[in-house]
Amino acid sequence: MISKQKAINWQRIYDLLAEQVPASKFDAWIRPIHAVVNNHQLSLSVPSRFFLDGLRDHYEKLLGELVQKEFGDDVEVIFTVDPSLGTVTKEKHSKKEASSIDGFIDPRFTFENFVVGSSNEFCHAACRAVADQPGETYNPLYIHGGVGLGKTHLINAVANSLLEKDDMKIAYRTSERFTNELISAIRGGTTEQFRNRYRQVDVLIIDDIQFIAGKGSTQEEFFHTFNALYEVRKQIILTSDRTPRDMKHLEDRLKSRFNWGLVADIQPPDLETRLAILSRKAELAGVTLPDDVAFLLASRISSNVRELEGALTRLTAHATLTGKIINMDFARHVLRDLLHEQVRTITVDDIQKKIAGYYNIRIQDMRSKKRTRNIALPRQVAMYACKQLTSMSLPEIGESFGGRDHTTVLHAVRKIKRVMQESSDFQNEIDRALSLLR
Ligand code: ADP
Ligand code: MG
Image 1 (cartoon, rainbow, N blue to C red):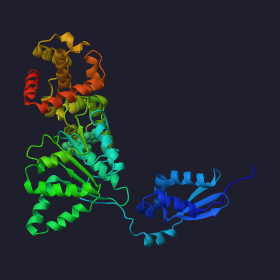
Image 2: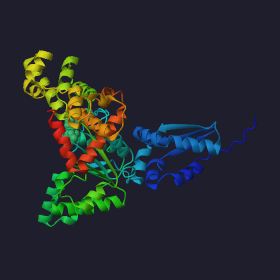
Image 3: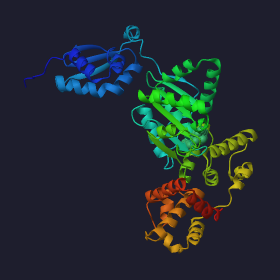
Image 4: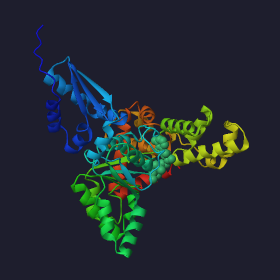
């Protein structure tokens, strides 16, 4: 067969890549390539193994497509490492730098060590997306949720993951530290430096932003930093213990900015996720946690992952110091104070009965298919109560309410929360209902 194939010409591919790849990436990844053509082979040499991995991750596909389009299928692209190229490229491209971080992050808080369950999957996915494409997907990313549910862990995971990229300048602060720095900058007359420092970063992460509420000059400064970064599409990530709307004493212009990107909430984990977290933490700590002990902890300590972790740490420490093995008796003894607090368990039957009584409907209606408002609302309240007061998962709750889907439960929980936020009357109504159960 006569081949109509054109001679392989690296320059042609190089020019096409220059059109398609952003300049900074082109300088970093394509320019350093040394190409040699040999019959049907295009051999591409790069300075290091690390470089090779990066190049293949980002551009192998595109390279392959261009080569095939220009020169046909039977061209083989080969990658090789040639360390002698290193010195040249370094000089030529001293601009390409490793990523850096200003602030303290915890190297143990990674995505790999984060257990995903229905309570945090949305937030986790948002953080992943931001780590993959900072500044391009959700900006700002605002994470809110109660204490000890993994907010700090997740934003550290984003930072840890960004550190593996090139050329990322990350600043990580608690809002307290941000405030303190600002105060000393004001005192020392160095606000200009303070400003420049923050405005040069690619990613700004501030943990527990609720603490800037009410602090006039910090808010003011943060507002300007926010705008400066946002305008040039630099990523901003914030966490808080509450929604932007619930931040009393926060200026409206900041509240509204916090809503510009994505607001993601993180909920207390269900039993299954708590068990998975325990098992992951035990594995990381190198301890063997028997299933019944794990279940005891996970079912009794339900509202806060930090406490759950604390219980595990305490168990491990006692076991190591006394040389005993961890079993049920040992756990009950060591954790007696923690476990006692939460002994009284509320069942779904209690909840359905009390809430039905409160709203004057029949308990059967809770589990029926009826969707009239006078039935649907109490049912949603009861679902919400189950989520708050028991360790049941969304599917389990759905099952107890006439075999409903977990998304129906999620919808109910979110709706009740939303209306509670919007109306203090409704909030009182719900507080009274729940107080019947405690
Ligand atoms: P927050 O900032 O929301 O108060 P943290 O991120 O400090 O909570 O989390 C408290 C502890 O619980 C940390 O040690 C964290 O690693 C752990 N943790 C929380 N959620 C998870 C999870 N889904 N998987 C693994 N560890 C978790
Ligand atoms: Mg935190």
